Length: 151
Image (tube, rainbow, N blue to C red; front, side):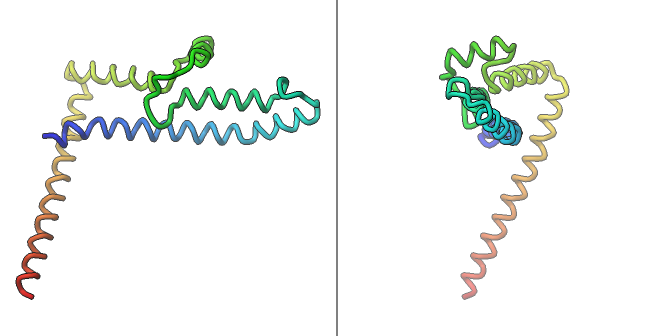
C-alpha cells in the first residue's frame, strides 16, 4: 500500500521536471543566438554596461531561471520577479501553473471523472508490473539458493 501512496507524487514530480527541462532547453536554444546578436549590436553602438542589450538579456535569463524553478519548489521568489510577471500577466512560477493543473485534476478525480478511471487503470498496470518483478526476483533468489546447495 505504501508503494501506491508514494507512486503518484513521484510520477507527478518526474513529469513536472521533464516539462521544466524542456522549457529550459527551449529557452537556452533561443537565448544563445539572441545573445550573440545583442553582443554585436552592443559592440557596434558602443553601449555602456547600463545600456547593454546583452546585460538586459542576462537579467531576463535570471528572471526566467526563477520562474522555471527547475530543481524544486521556490518559496523565495523575489518581489521584483513577482512584479515583473504580474505586469506581464503571467504567474510568478511554473510551479503555480502545475499547482492549478493538479487542483483541476484532483477535482475531476474526486467527482469520478476520467482521471479517476485512468488513475485506477494505471495503478492496476503498475501493480502487475511490480508483482512480476517480485516474482522474478523471488525466482532468481530461489535459483541461487539451489545452486549454492548443489555446490
